[in-house]
Length: 72
Image 1 (cartoon, rainbow, N blue to C red):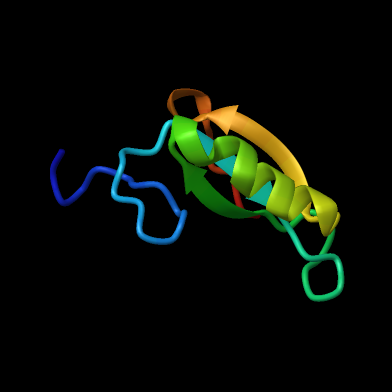
Image 2: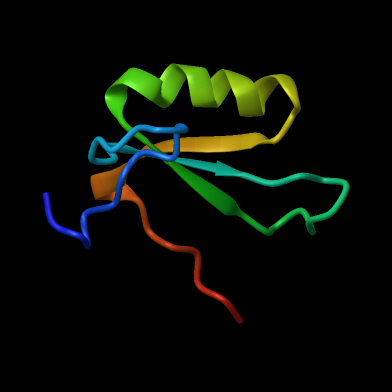
């Protein structure tokens, strides 16, 4: 792993990211806006549930398949 390797967003985790969790907070973001958290396999479910119970989670995609949305 190098300094440029994307790592999991879970607190204290230094494992390489395997998943992208796309989300937004409808109270402060426009509907098309997507924020992202990265997750390793171990933390994917926990982070997804955290966002999901708040109604923030929009999509979960393998990191290797993620494409950053284009901005107009």
